[in-house]
Image (cartoon, rainbow, N blue to C red; front, top):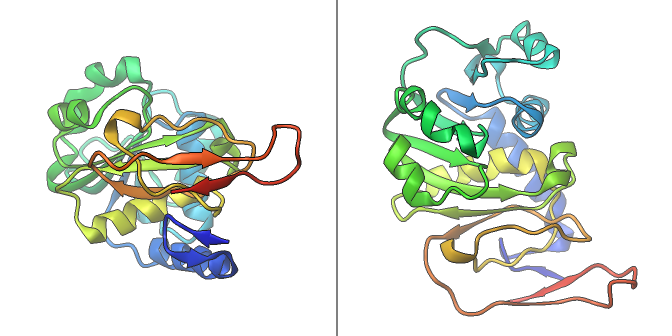
Length: 228
């Protein structure tokens, strides 16, 4: 079976996973995580497990859990007073708190900062308005909190190829590599739970041709198939 998101055969999944690990290990610059609740905390744990240098991670969380506080002992900077602008900002705050947190988030964003959002119901335009930066909007589903989810992401037009690679590596910390549909539009970018875990895929910010998903009967044990 062919992976239509990345153009690889399923036999090369392990290679993709290793590449993702290497991308985090070789990542330069600072990554800030705004919001370290269940999903944000799972992402941070996944990054560190995959080789991200803890000294490169900044966490902004007004009510950190004991698990997040424990990561500070490993070098993660928790609620620093003046972190300055960062290379990558991952926004994992509650959507209803986003506007209120906007001024603090904007201080972290420079003209070339990659902004990756996992907030539900917050379009790219709103993220650009509040945060600026180069925006990737991602929609993980609930199983992503335990590393078994599906994450679909849409990148704004000004996101570079290198930034897409960074976003892909960060999102794979909570996603299992499986076939996924490549053509996702901003108007239809809300990920829905699937019977089988799937990989994250960075799709361009454009309206694509119609995609169709074909799958066996829900009672069948076979894995769903994606037809692009």
